[in-house]
Amino acid sequence: MNNIILIGMPGSGKSTLGVLLAKAMSYDFLDTDIVIQNRCKNKLFKIIENEGIDAFLQLENTILSDINVENTVVATGGSAIFGAKAMENLKKGSVVVYIKLGCEELKRRITDITTRGIVMRPGKTLEDIYEERYPLYEKYADIIIEADNTSVEQALQMIIQKLTN
Image 1: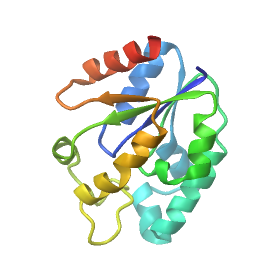
Image 2: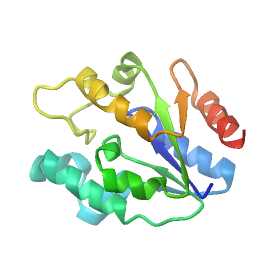
Image 3: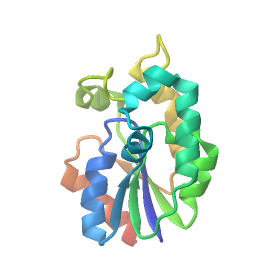
Image 4: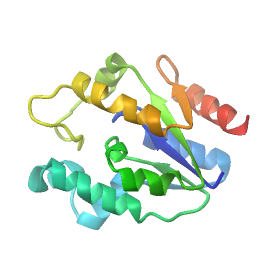
C-alpha cells in the first residue's frame, strides 16, 4: 500500500480523518480541494460559480490525474469520483477508503451548502447528490467505513483496523 485515498460525500470527514490518519500512519497528507484552490487562486465555490460545474469537474479531473505522491493520505473532494482518469490515477498502488455517512448525518454536518464548494446542479438537493454519488463511491472503494453514529476517533480506529487486516 503506497497511498491511502479517502473518498465520500462533502461533510463525511475526509479532511479531518485524513490529517489524523496521516499522523497515525506516519504518512504525508494532501487535500485535493486545497490543491485545486491553490492552483486556481480561488475558493472552490467561486471556481464553480465563475466557471460552471462542467468546467470545474473537468479541471478537478485534470488536476487529480496529475497527482503523483507516495506514502500519502489523500483526501479528495466529494466530486472526485466523477473523474475516471483522476480515480484511475489515484487508485494506482493505493487503497481507496469510502467514508460512508447517511444523508441525515450529512445534513446535520453541512451548515452552509452554498459556500462549501459542493458540485450541485440547480434544483438538486443533498439527497439527490447522495443518490447520484454513492454507487460511484462504492465502485471505487477498496474499503467502506460505515461512519454513522461514530466519533472521529472511532472512525479513525475503524480505518486503521481495516487497513492493517
